[in-house]
Length: 159
Image (cartoon, rainbow, N blue to C red; front, side, top):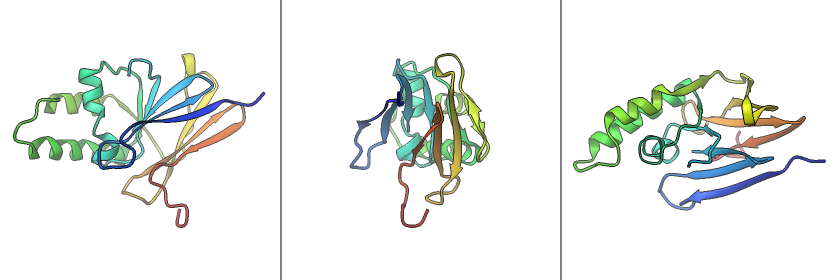
């Protein structure tokens, strides 16, 4: 019996709003970038990919584990600081909310296999390099010997 995979765009995929996808592998849900989210994988450090994290944690009660590469995490936090400071009137979240969100990210190394536990038992995630943005990541997700690649903003001709 094969593994069931479903990808669902959740927000504004075709414009400049923050991207948000739901990836489901045999009923285990990944938030790609809320209460039913099992894990969050962050692939890039720009506002389109990290812009909703602090808000989701503060306002939506997101408490799922978050995974990222160290460069994406560090640059993403700086991106959010810059975004916050550039707004004169902004009340969706605070600088402390940004710090909280990024301090709670589990940082993985390139090609590091990470075995998920509990409901995600049997699923392995591994970040791999992409040259779209500094530190950019494509995610390899493995379950029952089948590999899936989450490669948002990926140039198939070059990468």
